[in-house]
Image (cartoon, rainbow, N blue to C red):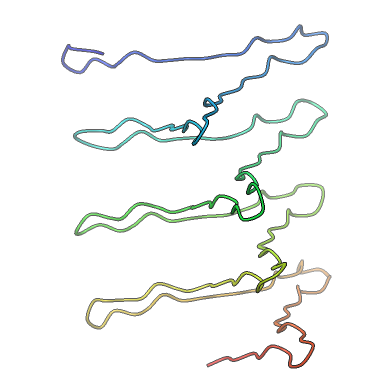
Length: 188
């Protein structure tokens, strides 16, 4: 902790060992909470609060690839449910609420641009229901509460083709098949 005016608090760096330049893999790093007879230990990683200005930023990223390799993959997922009735954990991706006269933060899910191949895909898939219904998916723009303010827009646009050739991307909106009655499509 720093006590002097305008001084910074001490940094914490935890670094795994590097491999020899001629071969070998860099050291791995694992952060694991303890097992519990009832509930396992929690893991919390929080950036510092800025008492006068901004809180600290957080970056969770894999390193760029070397000369002839791929960048590392990233997986964020919850564990499977236990026993016969256990549910798997939830994942929430959300920005915080704004102050009285501020705006909430944006959420952006984007694949990188390709320079010599195909652009990356984005898939939003809902799980199957084994003994119950399949999971629902809802895409809803924001509601306006202020007088004369407009609700948020929803825009779904297929990709454009190159100006010198190629076909624009297709778009398909299809309801599910049913053993008795197929699902309805309503556009209002």
